Structure formats: structure tokens, C-alpha cells
Image (tube, rainbow, N blue to C red):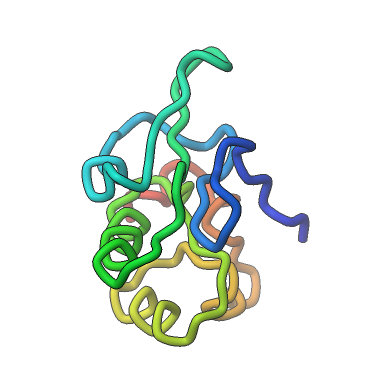
Length: 119
């Protein structure tokens, strides 16, 4: 499986948004406005990204919330912190790179057909 392509404006770190998959719902940005921004000038269309990685427990909570509320699986966690992974798993957020391997025959969230994002 290919490594997911991160949007180039993402701040370096564990939280990121996939390049070209944002559908402009603005929900993640509303959850973490201090951590996220959107890029409309560099490319046509709309793309959110993490402009800053969380540095405090409160910011971490907002970053996790941003991942959870993302509607199409483009806002993701790529780290290995067991507490964050446990939290995302408990919240049924299938948007982390290392939570668990996909079930046999199941594609990762960023490769799901569009109609599966809402089911």
C-alpha cells in the first residue's frame, strides 16, 4: 500500500490532512481553529491542513476532535502515541495510520468509495 500523501502545508508532525481529499466541510477547522487553516490561494479549490501541531493537552484534545469530526477521512493521525491511538479507537475514528491493520479485503479510509464515508 502506498503511503498517504500529506498536503505540503501541513506542519511537520503526527496530525495531518491528506492532499486533495478535503471536501471543505470546515468541521475540523471549527474544532481546532488554532491548529488548522485552509489553503485556497495556492491551488484551485479548498484544502484544510494542520498549520500547527498540538503542544499542550488542550491542543491535543482539539486535534483529536478535529480528526474525529472530519467527514471524509482526510484529517488523520499518523503517530504511535498509545493514548492517542486508544482514544481514536474508542471514538471509532478509523483515521489513524497505526490504529490497527485493515480487515482482510477492507481498504484504508482514504481509499474507500465515497458512499462509505457516511456509513
